[in-house]
Image 1 (spheres, rainbow over the protein chains, first blue to last red):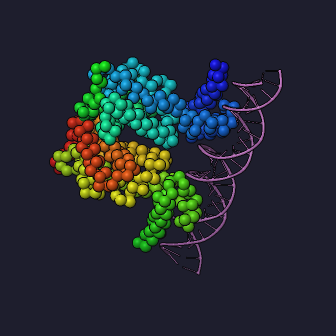
Image 2: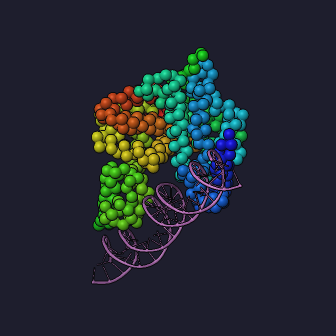
Image 3: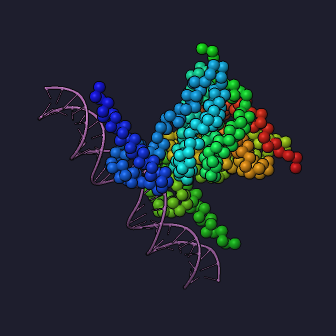
Length: 212
Length: 212
DNA sequence: CCCAAAATTGCAATGACTCCAAAAATTAAG
DNA sequence: CTTAATTTTTGGAGTCATTGCAATTTTGGG
């Protein structure tokens, strides 16, 4: 039972390094901070940093798995009779309306700016969108019981990942242009309607949840 | 007029380095080849390589601009009355039908494989899709004369870039799975129909070309 | 043939990342 | 409490992409 002590310490160390790194990144930008500096500031060796984080980008994007799985979770938890697309659109709309859409939280502006002027971080965002897409594809396959060779789940998945990434990019640009969170939220809600109107019926109705 | 001699030699050198590099990459994979090896094989110094190619990935993807601009060109050259989406879908369909779709050319299989097992190259592909998307957005703005703040051109653009990237990924996976080009073309043509059926009317009809 | 511009090169340095083996801390066992 | 096994941390050497700079060579044009 005391087995948890070591684990706890590891998690603490990891979290501390991540926090120190994030602080430095937000202060001076991603490329301007070296791993050596992070190690020094966190009072560990460079090798220890690499022990916890395989690459520099992982120091910035903690909780990546959570982000990548969010849309899948929304889809799994959709209401009976609701399609995957409608569930995703609904979740996005309500989170924009009640201010819980993460990229719009006050502290996030600086975060977004740092991403925007780091090519490495921008690429990482793209790869996260790709992984989000795969995750949704897997979820849709399970939910619909589609044939393994059927491309439709994956195509619909990429449309839903597209919706997500398009909104993210919108927020990123509008915030970078100095928009207030409330104004940006209003504008992005409008775009969400537009996005919806651009999707096809088939996409919008795919994978409606069966009665249990 | 003899001014072109230096330029010609530069182009030759550049092309030669690129060819040597591509040969090595196709033979041994992207990460397994170092810039130093390429320089040696091309009988130039490492600095000369960097003189022509800002990053290692640029040695693999030559003619990037051409690829990034292809969809924009298709759109600009669309028939009178034809929308942007229909033009793109038509070009893709015919190039798949007549075998001119580049990613399906015989020699391309190895190319695709090298991309697939190099994270760096996969990321570069994603960034090319992003740039394709921006290019299309600009084209649509010009073609429709939309307001600078209007998000619709960019949203439609990202849908069209999506169509392109989805087909590319399909080919990549099917070829990697050992499919013959002809079979893959047939399968991908089917997916293209599916893709079309997933797009919304609004997307399909956007930016119909006016009579001149 | 000579010169200024352009291209090529060598050298040194930075920074991310990997590998390996030694040391230090921690847990479990006696 | 002490020891042995295990894990974590560390130091150090090395690879590779990429950059900057100054020296050098090449080349087109006069």
